[in-house]
Image (cartoon, rainbow, N blue to C red; front, side, top):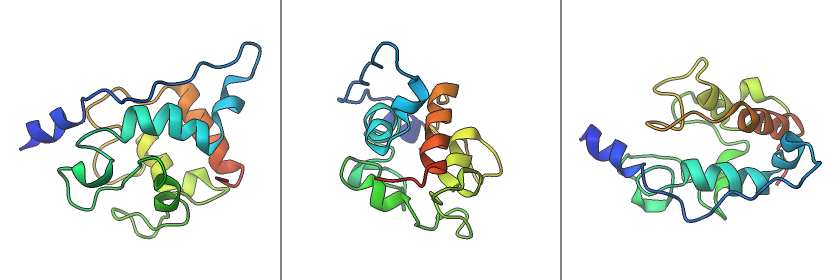
Length: 136
């Protein structure tokens, strides 16, 4: 069963990350929800068998697909730690999704599960987006 879950997350996403414009601050460029959706959620999380629609093999899994991710994240209590919102605007260290991607004070495994962790640049972008009020 575990093999099925892990192998389901290994499919490549259809959305390619967008290149960072020359001369721009990479973290600033990535620290918007649209950039996080396109460059992180679509390519590392919202994959077949993981955090996408009804294709997940796990019950109660968070859907991070285009069009629904924001409403499923911001000011929504996490399932694993209901005392924390998945994203608490302005407070990355009180946002369960952020804790899951850095692997700190969590239930279960660091995300993305069975894949390489996010790069420091990606983690910094998510932190900056949450710190800046987590706007859509």
